[in-house]
Length: 224
Length: 307
Image (cartoon, rainbow over the protein chains, first blue to last red):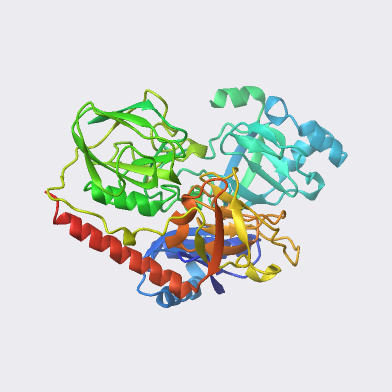
């Protein structure tokens, strides 16, 4: 474990573990411990990629060195119970292809597969949420089958609707908001990945497992 | 009390001190770009420091107040009323702010604070997700805003000691602490000056200058970022992340602007210049504590002048 300052109001706890299930379990467990048993002056706890970032108010922490000691103590204590806790599994229904997945045929052509094979590979994958960020509710997902890794599009689209499922290089994910985007669009989910009106606005959390389930256009329409 | 927006100005939004506790969901801190100005103008009208106020950008709005109230203006100089002082306005009075004569962003507090719903612990507008503020968007001509009932009034003549304010300038020296990848660059940020480009916004102030070249070009895992983080994309032109910055970024982090100097960056407009100077983390922390003390003194001084 190492502690590295992120400016004068946050410190990054790097756990030195990989982005596999065990590593993510440690990240999740440390974030949960720091949320439950917050050192004085801690204002936000952010799990991300084999690390947890702790935001603090220096006027409230009783000294930066003390905050670091308190974080280190809690990190050492995170072992048993929290680590055994299983990840949540979230199933995301996706209507592949069609209007919401305009690049499905392109992805298939680049992979030398049929569209159906791309869908089977994507929906058959087992994904891990490595972090939430970049945009509100956006999940960085690990676990995209190598056969359908596809480079980003040469020119980003100016508008990608919320709920669109894309592939960008070795990553797949769902656009939570309507934004510009450069990924290859393969489908669309009726779920809302981010909703500011919900108590917990993001559908996914770092450390969750995700699977995609293919639905047809009628099921997609009925969902809404 | 209501405020009618006759002309909205270029980009006028409701802001406060941001949202805490939602970064894990990817929600940025948000809030005022110049948090110090927002705190001070709120205190000047008897509000809590984090009350919702208006943030203007480059061109201010034209407003009509429907009842007698007290306002305070700070940050950039947009004319109309003196800055950094409580100003009484009459029912029906029209206040027309102009273009920024100094700075980039103006802050207008109204006694009682702007009455907009609390969304995810904040009242500020986050445009990208259409969250908070007035319907999640910038003000438009014809909008109506409400202020909560203002309680306190200044009873005495009084003047702000401007030495407590940031050293605003169109060519400031901005203090930084080292970033995690500082060692991966040839040279540092501190030997050259940079110009602010027109692509700057509430997410980041984009700089132009001689390219800051990275020595090793290895791939980085995306990492947590915060307002103040100075990222360097492959083109070597640094970006200072600001209030609406995403929570995770993929570019190397060469430095972080210290908290007390972020207002200086918030007030730069395209074409302005800045230089960086490195300080220690201990020094940055001490400066935050000094500023907190100055704000506490202001709060106390004002409480004796208000009823």
